[in-house]
Image 1: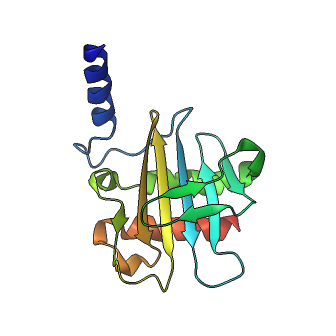
Image 2 (image 1 turned 60 degrees about the vertical axis):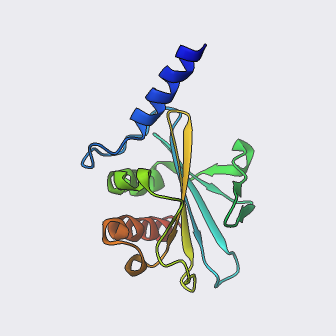
Amino acid sequence: MKNLFCLLLITLLYSFSNNNQDEKLVLNENDSLVFIRYSPKGQYGYTFYKLTKNQVFRNLTYFTYINQFKFYYNDNPERLVDLGSDKFNLTKDLVKYFPNRILAEERRIGNRSSFDDGAIYIQLTKNGVTKIWELESNPNLVPQEYRVFVQKVNEKINQLR
């Protein structure tokens, strides 16, 4: 049992290793990339999307709770609406902009004192392991290596609306 645990731990660490920064993210059958934009302006504070290997979904319930300690969203399949192949085709390339370097980062990235422009929440589920990050939605307020990704997330959310 101890050996099995060690093997599982090594496998998980390997799956999230950042040894090859040029390697592109690939979503397999049970993997997903959730991207949520919080905006302090407007009627709905949160815009929720979930990208899988073959589909993109929107959560129409707007049930999301985020604070500095916890991140909850309603991922009930009954609450997710498939946006169809046209929207998927607009969104599927987002994974190629995913910066592998983020895997080694702490949860919060960017200017911690400013949320005037809102925030982007990223949740990657890969090989059964889930990691979450909180980034400024303004690309100029995150480190250089994440700016293109933040810009693309904003672009995709705008295209999906």
